[in-house]
View (cartoon, rainbow, N blue to C red):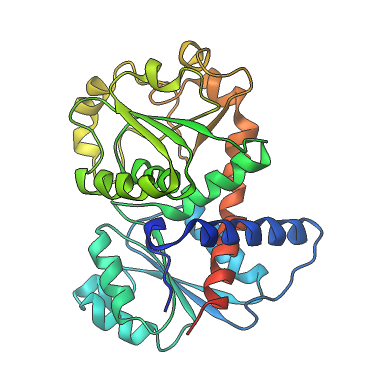
Length: 306
């Protein structure tokens, strides 16, 4: 059974197959040609973390593919009352055709997948957000970026880890700038470097955003204060001083560089209002592409069932 838990589980060709499927399905959707690739299938959507884009994109996506989505909040199912994850998996996966989970620990997602009879998709964990970075790659292609040189400026979090895996698998250049003490998980970095040996990806780390963005054609960032880190807000704001993606920082990139943000965006923290609005078309195309990228992933997983 193939699950979509992290990009490290896929080859370059498999990742590109999903992207190609997403492009095809998006084109069909825009032409109002809703092909029922997942006719009468049910997607169980388990949310331990709240979301706007993840819920709307998956629920709309499965509907457009001919199926139906079931929103399952941890407040509404026995998982939120202490039922073991493996038991929840063994029950739900006997009733639905596919499961998406948005949760905290990667280990909980992996436990669910271990006991599941159907494909499981990572809608976000504290370690990875792979559906988002697939979306970002689709968006880069749409804006003409075929040879990415990407700078990630900000926290060494689940988005950074996902960018690491994408770059390592596809073989492009990625520069990461984080404040000291907010670097990426060392184990994930080691995994990415091992993968990069085969793909030829050029991955570098530092603490200076200016060095990271100089000459790049894609700049991306994320919120400094993720869900569950609210009590660290003031400490983080101080630590991330100088990491705002503003006019001065973007002026160091290539002339036609694009800016991406997975949203929600907090203006004048990780990105200036001016830069956000200047690149709004890219950002909201990226937001829309969650819908199409995830449809590509779901259809691919369905085609690769045992």
